[in-house]
Length: 317
Image (cartoon, rainbow, N blue to C red; front, side):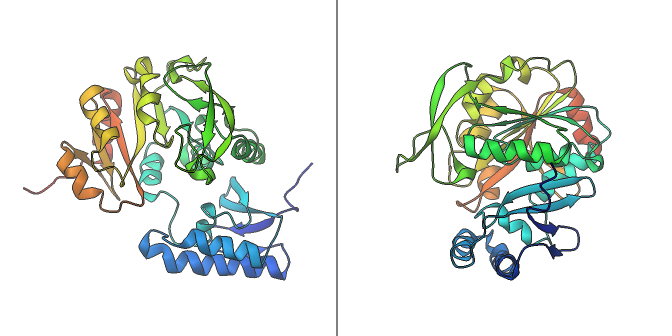
């Protein structure tokens, strides 16, 4: 049954809102204004505004966003993370999205670790990005249910798996964290638990075949353990998109890619990639301790050639 009528519709291209009652539409407009106001500060304070809106102007209806002509993305009304999409002047992850669009003619498999509601899987499997095959992995059970719905909303064009990516498969671990976008198998100070989940080592994913792979790794502090479970994968034609958080002055994740995995890492820019060769360069980039920074890592000649084709930014001495 088509459930699209049981949602508030938002068109990302033109910003139009349809469906919903007056209270719900007013709520979306307020969240749009809050996203616009907080965007210059990397949305600092937006989550508080979204929570206030969903409290004083409540709704049980999801927001169904038309991201692309053939792609929808659904998230709960008042979601303190994804409602920032209501400010449609900038995409979710513009530099990485531009890079992936540039790779649309490459026949690769996309593995989305820490997929959340499936935004990246949905767009990569779209026509604009080359209709890639995708495996979307999410640990949190509530978040996973929305991920599954987004796969269904997009004709099941990406596969979903309910697991926590880790160094070994088959272990049962707890989930911690109050925010769905930051839930992790690492215990937090508050001890908030989001349930239990079975771990999955990336090398144990069946039927990956011989295609080149783009691995998106956003697993809330477990990136190194996840790569320990992907040693075979790392030695294939694999490119990793990973997050190094601004709150880590040691740049532990990037250091692991550089020194332990012997990969080259790059910062994707508007029209080219910039190779990062030292931790000092990372310190100059990671200036905001509140946000995560996305980098690209690979040691595959196949992907290094494609990165060179995309463009390498020359850094002045």
